[in-house]
Length: 262
Image 1 (tube, rainbow, N blue to C red):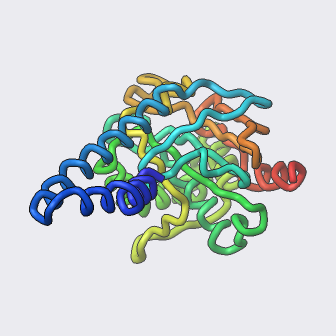
Image 2: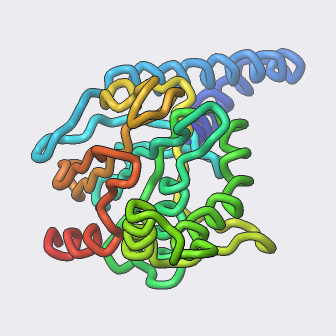
């Protein structure tokens, strides 16, 4: 959104005026100066908007915000008017060097639904994930996908299930029920069809009151995993804050809710 605003302002307003007023060399210098000024001004406006984000509950309008995406470009909640939105605030990490495995499964699951069942087109839907880290950190998140998906498979299919304690058996059954799909990215590129919002200043996470330094036994900068369903008018129709790391609404439940909402 910011880049498109810059282009419109530059090519339709500022650049013609500069070319008219100054000679070539002066225009070149002015172009650089004014372009930087416009960029800085628009970025400052985005940050000012993000700092105004507030908590939202069902029946309220979600705050407008603009963030860069990991894949490149910008995402603005304002631009989502007319679309339904599944807005997932991911936990991110549970320790300084350990990613939330279930968050990654959740991303892979919704990505699979987008790629195989075309749910974005079917429900006029956008699905976005928010992470409270800088972009460089998310490179490590992407690289961790194969090992994290292998970890879930080890939960579902332990080497000697007959020797497990009762608690371990219950966890095995829980993971088989709640994370039924198998994702193996060992020898292929991880598909990233869903925008990953880079909340590097944690303004949106803080505004939504989801940012924590300690949660469910994990001590690091992280979010309480939360899922919002937002309708075409920007109104929150569903909000689910996890009570523990493994407590997430299933994608099947989310799609049933959206079908009833439409």
